[in-house]
Image 1 (cartoon, rainbow, N blue to C red):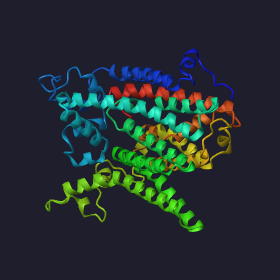
Image 2 (image 1 turned 30 degrees about the vertical axis):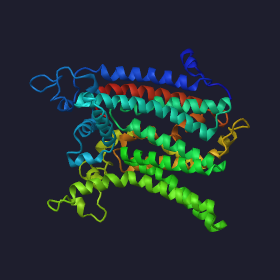
Image 3 (image 1 turned 60 degrees about the vertical axis):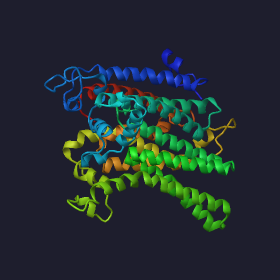
Image 4 (image 1 turned 180 degrees about the horizontal axis):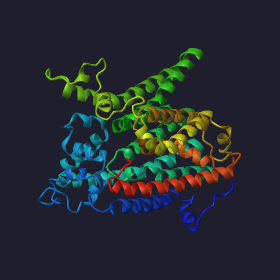
Length: 457
């Protein structure tokens, strides 16, 4: 494999013999740069909504207007204002039920309070906890992606190690940018979803090696991680496709080949795992139904639906989320902003669905992955492809730039296109370098806009 051009600085970071150390150094250097870009923005920002959080805080001036905004609240922008309020006070307003991430942040805050950490109270301290959690979760998700990549491509040769390393490095500088620093759910979702993918692919390897008990533990643990990811962000439910696909394949094999104890056990574990993932969506709806629909008086409209869902009601009623609702002329600039990531996500999903034989040949004879990379890529491509379609048709489309961070296939596509096994690898290398440069530039500009409380969000 021909080398990819490197500067002296990048060469010192790109140490394949010490990948974790190199990724750690690159991660914290990038985070420091982005952190400064956000915190250095002056004042409370163009939109002063953040001062509503600091109104009862000591940092506020007597008239209730923030003078010098505490640095932690520099990261309280857009939805994170809701997140901090929910984490500190619980769900007070109906529209807040659109957000699941604050539930996990609140559990963490309550845990700190129960341990005697009274300093966890108040919006500033809640924001500080959220910022720390986001940093740690993003760092761990980088390592999770590295291990996931090793499951898919192997890690015995220099080419395999390079794919794993560069994919994790791209995750560091991905377009989510400042949202991976702030009290947002993207970092935690990324950690949960990528770790779930890692355990899921590990279960396929265990199945191939005949280690059934370990396989079952890995499947069920992956399901729990996907369920938590679904609580954080509803698109985590898309990972449930993995269980639906495997259940169909095992059921089909049983129909064709006849039943066996092994197939029955595997199917039972897969079904239980799928139900666990579904709980990530169902449990918050049940809690909301108990809060709003069992009082007997002044019921909310969604309570009388055939399938009551506060999430669907809130998204449509308060946030105007729905099929083609975002397709307006005024939102055209946001579609243009999201277009590069949407195109890459769609292209990479199709690439993975085709499972190119060139990737299978990358394994070589040294420590190859015991399960076909094409088979695993196919499975992981579907959730990402579904997300891209839903973002294009139903979401506030610009958020795809940050929620794409928790899906691995597009990273692999960019890196693999630069490898010699592709016909036009010179073009692929330029594409990889251009993509990395664009992500860095976008994240820095976004960081300044985010710190100044300016769109896009």
